[in-house]
Length: 378
Image (cartoon, rainbow, N blue to C red):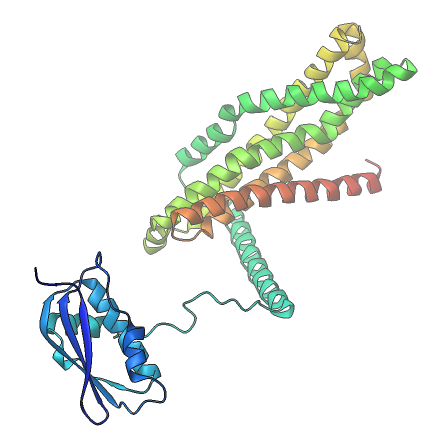
């Protein structure tokens, strides 16, 4: 039975010339000779100047022979030997030329060298500068679009505004209801544990009423809307960016800031105060459930204590915060959506970034406004 395995032989027909005889059948599944075998034939130091091939005994080949020739050519380049592919089959020669036509990029492979601390700080600083410039540009464009609204020059569809109001208003009530009642329950339980030690259970009404009206109602509604509506805005605009719909609007002369961003901002600005009032009411109801069921406080006594503790201005401070929170959520969600890349993963990154950015802005702005209120004696 004839031996049709991959075969290789080396001869020296002339001084400084090496001939590689290819024979047998070169298949991926079969064992094959290595480039090192030819390297041992040449040996260092070498007087070989030219390498060529003889493929008369070659019976068959696939990509394994191509890989062998590519590695052999790299070896010849290192050894400064001229590689002559004239003796190999024509199809294989074309594939070899195609495989070696474009050199490998110098930075294509992963570099093990660690980046210096100074370099990392510089990269982060430049990225922070770019992000800050893009944020200011977006805020300026949004403010300009808002200024065009009173004169009726802002171009957007009224039906879009109504749809966004429905999305961030009525359809958000179930989750706002659940969270607000639970927050009121938690505040009442936390206060009851301490106030019972002094026999002052009735002041649970003060704690829950003031906490919900001034802080927790607006903040919890804002965090809910950041995770629900802000993420939805980023995903919607990011998907439009991927599908090049925003580019199409600009091509038609329609400003995306007015057509896409402005209705979303208006919807959240209008709905956040209403959601805040709704959350305040339900939080107080949740606290009342704890006071009535657990602390044996009569409903009338709890209501009167809440009315004496909470003034109308306390609700006003929360409403002012809620309007600001609505603007921040809309800006964060729309900005991340407009800055989205052109891939599916970029949409996910934009959505995540929108939620994180909105929550951070909510907490920071709430802290600033609380300090301002305290300074002004409000």
